[in-house]
Amino acid sequence: MKPYHVSFPIDIIKEREASMWRYLEALPFEKTNIYSSVTLGEGMTPLVRFERGEPRFLLKLDYLMPTGSFKDRGAAVLIAKAKELGVSAVLADSSGNAGTAIAAYSARAGIPCHIYVPAAISEKKLSQIKMHGAYLHKIPGTREETAEAAKVAVDREKIFYASHVYNPFFLEGTKTFAFEIWEQLQYQVPDTVVLPVGNGTLVLGAYIGFKNLVEAGAADKMPRIIAVQAEPCSPIAAAFKDNRQVRPVENTGTQAEGIAIANPERGDQIIEAVKATGGTIVTAPEEDIATAQAGLAGKGFYVEPTTAATYAAYKKHRDIHINEKEVVVLALCGTGLKK
Image 1 (cartoon, rainbow, N blue to C red):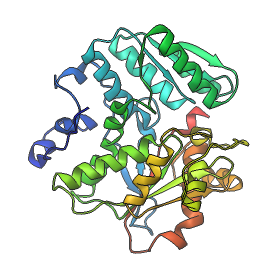
Image 2: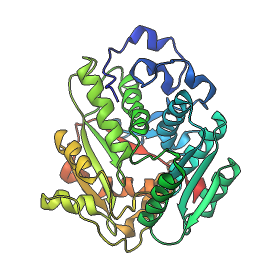
Image 3: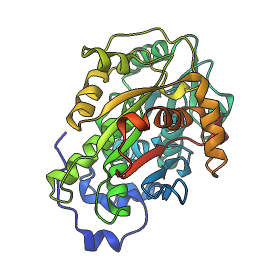
């Protein structure tokens, strides 16, 4: 896939619809209007202060997407590209949010969709996938076993693999997270972004997006990425700490199921991206997640435990890793209505 490192026409962007498609020149399409039959108005989610006393600590409310998570960014671009390519059906595997997003945008595009999920995921997420008309395949066992079953099916059925982990077009969608923050900060980038990381679709997408901005001359620096894992399942954080390659771990159970990836396929790539920004990878204590969720809700932000884990880690590590003069953006990625 060719890189889409282009200039950002600020005057033109200002006049476009308030969605992620205002950055069309930076997205991977030959027919630039193909998205119009797929979009659900995703993107340009609010960037707000956590509270009045912390003007430099901002929250990006990506849980206000059409299906309730940031995964809509990647799914919208991936399914629009699938439609441009003329694929007849798609297949994806997911622990919930990505599957929901792929199912919704496939329904919008009129493309049959198969979603493979671990049998034990949230019933609300399963209901949403089914309501979008996808063929749901429940796989007993771990998230990794679900992924293997999906890959077997892709090879057997010769179907388009709409994977948020492997398909590069998904990252071309999640990179718009960076573009929006840049625009919302008056064409500046923050000092630090705090992001959850499981399979890395937001971390890698944000890295690509901010890198696109720097290469286009639209930004003069890369923000530092602080990536967050849950303590009971943190193979990337462990590898980062020990300065080694990522190795599989046993998922001993966590409320943050969306980032509980015991064997992340892009783990080493994630570490490379984080290091390139001068960032770090930290963990969220399991016992702090519910408190963090309640704390966010008390400020008006109702998010799922995976997103609350990001805030829990921020609170634990901010005195060590964040200077009080920094502008910090923390991603709120999934709605609490799904859990």
